[in-house]
Length: 226
Ligand SMILES: Nc1ncnc2c1ncn2[C@@H]1O[C@H](COP(=O)(O)OP(=O)(O)OP(=O)(O)O)[C@@H](O)[C@H]1O
Image (cartoon, rainbow, N blue to C red; front, top):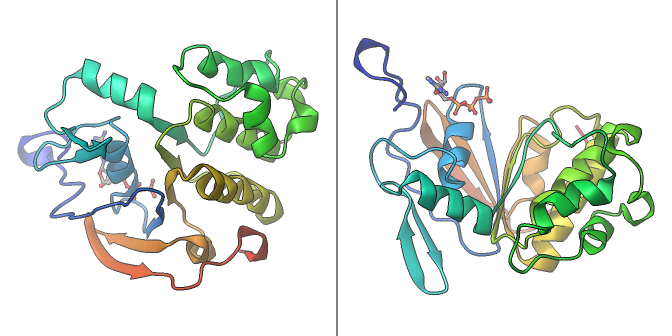
C-alpha cells in the first residue's frame, strides 16, 4: 500500500507467488496494474506494507518484509541485478569502466571483459558510453547488472526505449545470462510477444495475478518480433 487514509493506494493485493531458482518469468499487465511494485518488492527496493516476501539462499530463508534498510541494501548489493528502461550509464566512462564500477565493489565478480563478452560487446569495451547506440548501452547495463553474479536479475521494461530489432538483441543477452549463468530472471514488458521466451507468464490486473501460464516450449529471443 502506498500512502494512508483516503489517498492510500493498494498497488498489490493477495499476490501469492513463488519464483524458482533459474526460472525466467515475464510480467505483463496494463499500466498501473502493479508490475513495478511487485518487481521492486522482489528486488528489495521497496518493502511491502503487509504480507511477506521471502528469499531463500544456500538453504536459508530471509524475510524482506520487515528487513531494515541496511539489510535490504545488502540483499540488493549481493544478490540482485537491476535493468531499467533507461540505461543510466556514465557517459564519460567506457563500457568496461561502467561495468568495473560495480565489480570493484563485489565479492566474487566476473571480469568486466567477460561480462561484456557475454552480452556480445567484447569488441566495444573501450568505447565511451556516449559513443554507443541505445541497444548497446542497454547491453552494457545488463553486463553491469550481472557482473557481480547476482542470483536474481530484474528487468523493468528493458526494451521499452528500443525498436524491435535492437530490443531482440537485448533480449538475446538476457536469455543468455539466464541460460548460461542460471540467473533467476523476471522481465516486465508491454510487448506481449516477449512472453513467449519465458518459462512462466504472469498477467497482473488491479494488483492481482489475473493469470499464470507456463510455456511448454520457450521461443528463442531471436525469433520474436513486435
Ligand atoms: N510511490 C507511489 N506512491 C503512490 N502510489 C503509487 C506509487 N507507485 C505506484 N503507485 C500506484 O500503484 C499502482 C501500481 O503501480 P505500478 O507502478 O506498480 O504499476 P505498473 O503496472 O508497473 O505500471 P506501468 O506499466 O505504467 O509502469 C498504481 O495505481 C500507481 O499509481
